[in-house]
Length: 339
Length: 194
Image: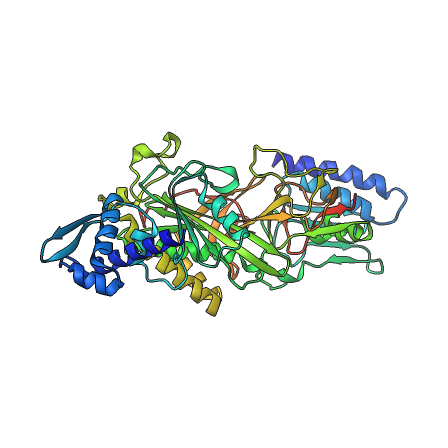
């Protein structure tokens, strides 16, 4: 295992140096001195990378050049792009897995550290709220679950779901879309769901053990990839932008945002998150129907309270505090976001 | 609206029956009224009988949850909202039954007197006894559970917390109905030693 790990580290370093070099060639001699390896060892690692799908050009007397990176989301692809301190510094990458949340929860129970992430190219049992499925076709989108160990009383843990939503909406906007948050933490583009967050908590009364934040983002799915019943209500970033999305770059940008917002939240509390959430929200100001397992509520979504709960003003003028449920927009407003 | 009238009619006789031997509403009658309200869509009930006026509003702003007026000299019961909702503008959780007026509110004390350990909710949220709506409950009354076994889920804002049993034993009581809102610290289960 030790040899494998160091070989992987060497491969990550080679990719890092080649990425930094851009279109320029990097000589085998420079690489071998940077890595403290023989030129033969460098060549072996380059060959190993080629087998993994990297296109690395080698020109005699000039050196190596990175031409193409495979469309995967392992540490090799993400490592050189990541600017985070903790988040994604350890990546457990799976070609296929039942559910990244399940795997991350088990790893956390076994002692995984803050910031470790489980990523999968495909989920065969992607989890949504209350037993619902999350369509997770192979190689197209982003499915990950981050293990967080924040110092928080358990009562405040639900606020983390809004922290994640803010980071996600920001990353999707930076990618060029007009993403907005539907309470509490679905992210939509043009009223269609592009991403979902499912968070699971392990805690005792006084202390959070860990939180698993599971995120699914439709990046390169086309309509045919969605189950038929979702084609009216789902979208992907690629559909919205009309071009293919670089998954690794998006993932690295999202994790950077997520760590930034998490830091801000733990330092300054929920208020800055709340303010940003409100600016990114598509729910506030709308007439909504809130469905829970056993009740329905209609009214105007007015605000979120200092803990993130949705405040809905009913026709009778009563302000209801909503903590769980599916929010549906009743009459889409014509003046904004009609695209 | 039809359900509203029906529920109000249903509430009255139950109360009157209990009232026959007393001079004012007793706790049992109040409990029955609240139970009927819970199983209906009624959110507000005003009932007058002689000097007595009963006003119940549930799932709403906390300023007046239940006020039971009698003649000026008679006893007066005012049920205060839980402390975390004491701020004037803070509304109540969606469709929450008035917590201090329901059997569930009395349950923590009752449960505490009984043998075993009471498992309580770590935050304000929605209580689920099943992993998904179409699946069987994690546990039932009488189920023998091991320490660390999942008893239920409490959800708030799509954060799912699987509540584990802190002890091994038998589920003696389940103190909240599936799908109901729960308060921070509200008793959920009583686990008895086997």
